[in-house]
Length: 108
Image 1 (cartoon, rainbow, N blue to C red):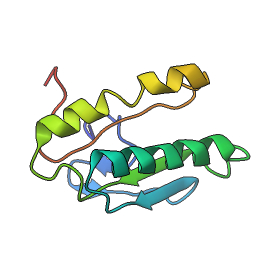
Image 2 (image 1 turned 120 degrees about the vertical axis):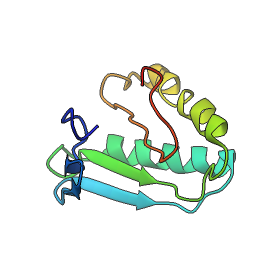
Image 3 (image 1 turned 90 degrees about the vertical axis):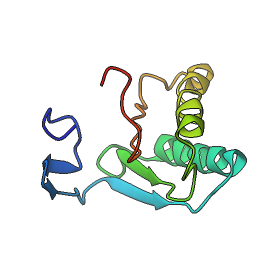
Image 4 (image 1 turned 135 degrees about the vertical axis):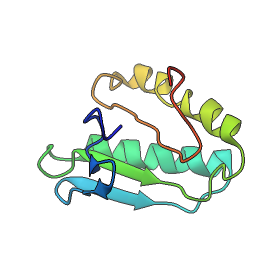
């Protein structure tokens, strides 16, 4: 991700450069699907309620205890998050990107 310049949270393969402005770092110790969905929806609401992009444009939702040893659960959970935004007509406003240490994109 860093080599392609896609991830805004790294400036190269050896140095992370976390941005400070306009980013909300939400850490939730949830462990179950239900708790993680609840955490997700709380962050969607916060993004929607933001006054403007200068105040809050990005959320980095960190759930270090969710799906620790189950990559398949993580993948199955991830694919359910974007479609549920469609009835709210925000699927074009909110982009979801997933990161997990042992998970890779399907195209490599």
